[in-house]
Length: 189
Image 1 (spheres, rainbow, N blue to C red):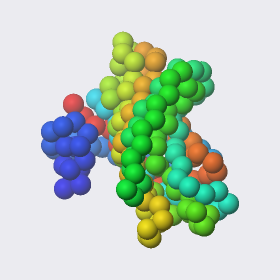
Image 2 (tube, helix red, strand yellow):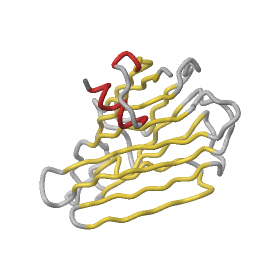
Image 3 (cartoon, one colour):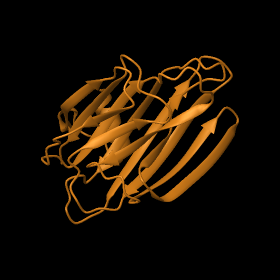
Image 4 (cartoon, rainbow, N blue to C red):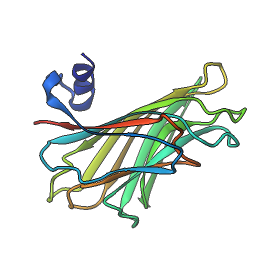
C-alpha cells in the first residue's frame, strides 16, 4: 500500500507495488554524511526514504540536508523550495551552488533538543547520459509542541549529463544520529 501511495506522489499516477526495488539501506551512526555508491543503472528513477535526527544538540531552529552526486563539489547545482512553519510560509532558491538543498529535512528545536525528521526524495532519469538531473523532495519535522513544525517541498538540479552512480547526503550542521535510517529504492519504468 505504501509503495502505491508513494508511486502516485512520485510520478503523478499510482505505481504498482512491484515497481519499487530495494537497492540499499544505511543506518546512521553519528556521521556527517552518508553515501549510496555503485548505484546500478537498471531503473527509470530512484527514491530515498529517510527517518533521522540531528546529532547537534547545541544548535537551534530548523535545518536542511544537502545532496551531491558522484563526488561533484563544483558549482553545478541549483535548489528551490517552499516551506511552512506554523502560520508562516517562505520560499528560497539558489543557483551555482556546490550541492542541492533539501529544506526542512532536519530539526534542532529552540531548546537544542533534536527531534526526528522524515523525507522522501525522488531522482528523475538518474541513469540518463544526455540530460541534466532533477530532484524533488518532501520533508518535514515536528517537535511535538507548538514551537517548531516544518513541512517543505524542495526541488533541485545537477547540471551534468553523467549518470548518477553515487548519492551523498550531508547534514546541515552536525551529523545523522544513531539509528537514523535511509533506504534507496529503484523505480522500474
